[in-house]
Amino acid sequence: MDWQFVFSQALTQAIGPTMLVYALGAIGLNLQFGYTGLLNFGQAAFAAMGAYGLALGVVAWGLPFWWAVVIGLGAACVMALLLGIPTLRLRADYLAIVTIAAAEIVRRLARATVWADTTGGSDGMRGFSEPFFALIPWDRESTWTLLFVSMDSGRLAVDFGIFELQYSYRDTWIMVVGWALVLFFTGIMALLIHSPWGRVLKGIREDEEAVRSLGKNVFAFKMQALVLGGIIGAVAGFLFALSRANVQPDTFTTDFTFYFYVVLILGGAARIFGPVLGAALFWFLYNILSQGLSQAIRADVIPPSVLDSTQVGPLVFLLLGLGMVLLLIFRPQGLIGNKKELLFDVR
Amino acid sequence: MSDKETKAGKTAAGAALAGVPPEPGAPKQDAILSATGVRRAFGGLVAVDVEHVEIQRGTITALIGPNGAGKTTFFNLLTGFDRPSKGSWEFDGRRADRMRSYQVARAGMVRTFQLTKALTRMTVLDNMLIGAADQVGERMWAGLFPGLWKKQEAENQERALALLERFKLIEKREHYAGELSGGQRKLLEMARALMLEPKMIMLDEPMAGVNPALKQSLLEHIKDLREDGMTVLFVEHDMDMVHEIADWVAVMAAGQLITEGTPDQISADQRVIDAYLGAHHDAAQH
Ligand SMILES: Nc1ncnc2c1ncn2[C@@H]1O[C@H](COP(=O)(O)OP(=O)(O)OP(=O)(O)O)[C@@H](O)[C@H]1O
Ligand SMILES: [Mg+2]
Image (cartoon, rainbow over all chains, first blue to last red):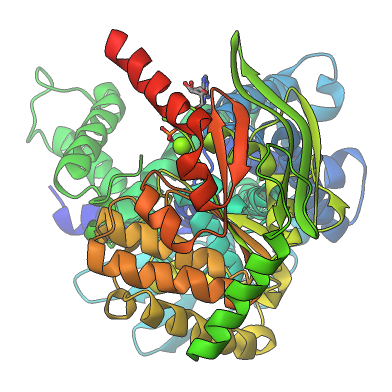
């Protein structure tokens, strides 16, 4: 069995397009949950706003790509306002309930048959990503080598000797844009969190009554965090849709939101680089387990009587779930979290 | 602050209250806070039912009363943390009963909590800085441009450090507020409230759990606030403490304002003794 291949694949994924989607979604969630203490269980729906905004804009309404992007961002904004206005004055759990319900409503609306002519119903939509890939500044014939990085007919390869990472023409572009976005939003977060604005958010997370008694309009701060986090969720949705070149309603289930939470908690909530590290680790572990097990079955290292290839998926999730439980017991602060902060009682 | 100045503030407060009769709801020369018909019921229980009360500007007023008298509830109502069943009040010439809690604080009436609310996972210094009013960097977009608020932040930090020095918390400035003791949290909360530079500060049992030596210096701080022209309203159970710093005392029992007066008048008032004994009597029966 080819361990080198398994490892190369997992590494490729650990910094690849899907990981970037998780990282972006978790950056938004980090602002909401990590810093402000808002329980947004509908991040998948914010991603769906981005993804469907883009797809509908380009395909159904024939708008230019950038206008469709604006629609996606606007839709996320509107959703944040709609969910926030009735709930943000109430106790924290109300937002949780409302967002989880709203996410399900969004998914059901997207797969509804009433307007399936426009949205594609449960099949979703495709054909909106061409303008994005038309932006690729190098052509399919590009070939060059720089130290251990090389491009061969538009495909990117990074050769570490033992491992080799390979990305298709399109994935390479997704990664260029995706990493730029991740760094951009991480930078924005770093600035905001270390500003007085960020300090108020952290205060709200600790005790919003206390912050109110100091003359801060807590509702407005929470709303800003919800909207900005939701917009970053929509950007994750753009990248998700573009990397798959389609949108499908059933990819935006609550599971998707929970992966964002897993990523955030794994990396360390309320840490600037928590989402990025968490996303890389999560997606690396997921891939090394599923690739490793599949390879082991193929190579007959694991006999079919013990495990067959259709059982790999569920088993991987079982193992990741177990890992998550162990993490919460032995390292509740996540990879780079601050253990000391967890020691204080938070009411 | 010199002794002479200290006397000046106290004398002024004394003079302002000189002619005021020791009766509940007595009108004051220059009331910073004036409340009428404030009532709050929890189901069948009337926690607060105050007909009229005025607080003289620039004085230290103590609010006393047995446990469950409604003092904290009255604080909550005045500061917008609870809504009255009915009633209205003015603060510093502005109608304040419709204001939200953060608007009350911005108008200049800042309160502390009986059960302290330290922001535990933030440093002591951050707890202080978050108190400062009108921060440019608290606008989301401005957060992205540190150049816009760095100067103001440095000024606030200077003020915060001076206050922490005064409240003997300077050594703890980089510690998490969650690492502080109960008494230290009381001190932090009071210092944090002062970061807003309020016109009136409302302290709910600020001395509870503070050691005697520090209590003495806290009393001096509170007297200094009066010299700075601030109005102080505080809840306290220790009558010695009340005698030492209060210019005026308001007494609540069973939700009502039963009397007002100077500390000496209050100690001699039979209604007050009855209220406390009554409460003890009730408690003994349970
Ligand atoms: N949220 C609430 N729900 C129901 N009853 C309440 C509530 N808050 C206060 N009360 C009741 O209102 C009355 C007044 O309570 P309050 O806390 O104002 O008393 P207090 O004068 O501050 O007492 P203490 O000196 O013990 O702090 C009490 O009988 C209390 O049980
Ligand atoms: Mg009380």
